[in-house]
Length: 420
Image (spheres, rainbow, N blue to C red):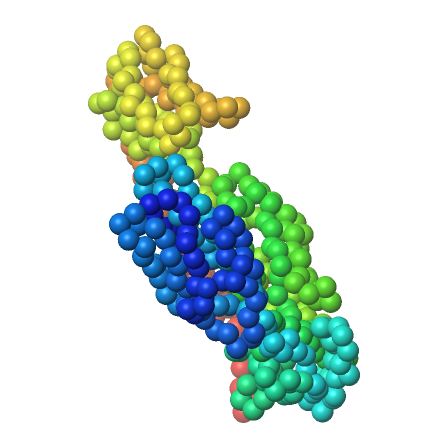
């Protein structure tokens, strides 16, 4: 709709002219006019007369392009003496549309198959399973029609690539009057076996991560208290099979989980999940005692402390901010006392024991051990000397017996007879 606003001496037009010709039925009080033109009328020039009070003038709106079908042009005339008074004139112009509306195909060929066309817009065509590409040829029924850019024939280098069991393409035809029609062709492979060995979903209970069917390896981690996880996987293609352990026991450290997918045609693909179960973090990071030299280890729970202090000053560092600690029995310490550091988080309780030994008692104990060692060494030396003496005596005795045996043998040997 086109609007033209005119300011005149009064709100009435004096005349309306189309291409210089006044409207036959024009009346200043009549507001609506219907005009009809042939298909070849592309534009019109509109002029109009109105009273300026000083002179009778002519206004011109210029050339107006006409679309096929309905066109609406409106003129509003407003009185210069009283702008509340106005009159709107409407021109309803119809341009005949004689263009062809035929947007159909005369023929359609997929590969070597001629598709039998009808009033429907979608067709299924079966092709051999071993085909990789196929040409689609189409002929327009009306020579004034055209293919929509990018949706015409598929021939030569533009042949259709067949991916999977079903490949869908569209051919769009535009009639001369610009009305469009879409033909949908489903190209279906016969005896097709899918090679889709991908997953649609891969869920790991308790693990929040983003899965992508085209990503085949993931590096994930869980807390130390997660001992098992459950796996659930679904394939993208219903004919594919999936093999995996539905429940996996986790060792501390790296656990490799493999989900294997086998496509309908035997194609195989693995999805690998590198799932790390974190190390157990002890509740206590470190314990020190002011003035006492000892080495704390989180997995050692009993310590002996040499001191004469009656109270120990502990410095305790925790790994978990939710954990708390309490030092027990840390008063009036003496030899044999036991101080306990108790660490608690939820239902978990860890206790570290510190046995007190007075330094003086430790010295006496060490001295006693030294005297005993010395006495034992002395006694051992005496025994050694005695054994050496007996060994000498025994050796001499054995030697004497040997000489005596030799002498007896000589004396008792028979003499030889002499023959004269």
